[in-house]
Amino acid sequence: MSLFSIEVQKTFRRWRTYIGFAVILAAVVLLEVIIKLNETQMARSFAGGLNSDFLVSGNVLNAWVITAFIMNSLYIHVPFLIALVAGDMVSSEATSGTLRFMLIRPPSRSRIISAKFLAMLFYTALLILFFGVLCIGIGLLFFGGGDLIKFQPGLPHIVVLPAHIAASRTGLAFIAAILSMSVVGSLAFLFSTLVDNSIGPIIGSIAVVIVSFILGNLPFEFTESMRPYLFTTYMGIWQLLLDNPIDWAEVGKYALVLLGYDAAFFAVAYYVFVRKDIKS
Amino acid sequence: MNLMSILFGIVLLFLPPQGGEGTRYLENAIRKFDAIKDYVVDVKVHMDIKAVQAPDMEAKVYYKEPDKIKIDSKGLFFMPRDVGVINPRKFDPDKYAIDVLDTLTCNGDPAVRLSLVLKNDESTGRNVILTIDKKDWLIVEIAAAPYPGRQASAKITYGTFDGFQMPVKVEVNLDVGKIDSTARGFGRERTHLNELKGKVEVYYSNYKINSGLSDDIFKKRNDD
Image (spheres, chains in turn orange, yellow):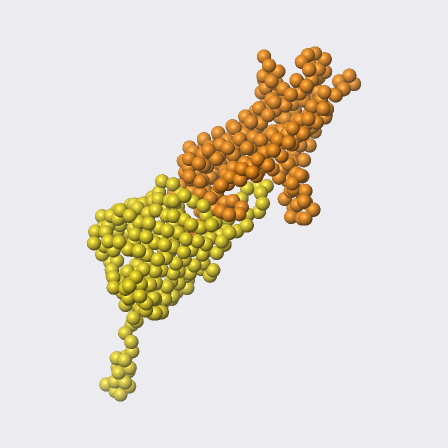
């Protein structure tokens, strides 16, 4: 059995791994039920300014619109759910006392840290895919399909994506969201190599995400000049994939920056782990 | 009968009849539509508005007198509210102060431009300028300013279906000012409101007129 499989098994043997799935299940079901109960009001709100000047027909509030709407919560609870597991990947071994035992035997430290990092990425991907399948599945069940009406910055401002395009774009958006959320996971993973308990990495990484968000959204010249250097600036990559036309150059830039942060956080975690003193 | 009564009678004789020239023109246009009790038509909308990117949209529009409208579409469909469905009946002469602005020639036929100002501001607050073809008594142009800063005008081309002259194309020029949208994601640049200005072409085909549409068709709201 490969080291990666062992790490994945270890991850999914911990009960905290399932908290993320349970929270997402509860949140998505709750949100979609609430939206369903307020469907008419929500549909009018979504049609927004259009209603006063246009006769609007068709399934305005459909699975794709609801999914795009719920995806905004990616910034709220999903980073915490990812940090909950990623921040525990290495530190839990230290807490339980298995780290020393693990490191005095083959395989090498570099293989171990790589396998743990890949397992963290696997969990992140699985959680986001679960989120996507749930949003779309319940959305289709409750609201049916339809064209995606979307408001975006600049021109055109209102974009209507036909249903078949909306489906593929939503899929792409979730793949981009995996990349986006992997940065939070990588950060929590890095923190978990630094300490011997899980609380620190979880709270630490969430604190960094929150502070970074706040800094990036403050309307001051100084904080705006910081925006290009904050990873949270690029975490909205998934939204670019729902724009029309897609600005691929921008998507590429966002993806490269996020991958860069992933690589940087992993490199530091790797450096710390392979030099970790397990004798003291 | 005293002198005052005779004088009052004479004054009444010389007063213009109630409902001036403009009202009569409008009534002629409404009368022209009188024979149409209901219709079903296939509608295709093509938008050429910078702020809106939408594929051509198709729907089946049901109309029943006096002002019932139902739109059935597979996908999302929207068309200009005031000028998308031409219905002279909605310009009730009793509700508007009607003035003749000028007479002109439209497509080689004599026409008249009427100003319709709502007498009661508490209602929808829509003031309209209509151009009526005096040869066929058809509304060939509508200009509406529903709210300050919002304007829509439409040029209407007619065709004949089952002996009725019905719109085949409505070319709408829209300028409805800045549109308000609260839908924006986190972590993105704040959305700047854009002007909804441009052209919308509405094409009508396959009319089925006076087929006896049931009221049940119109019971469900369009935006439900």
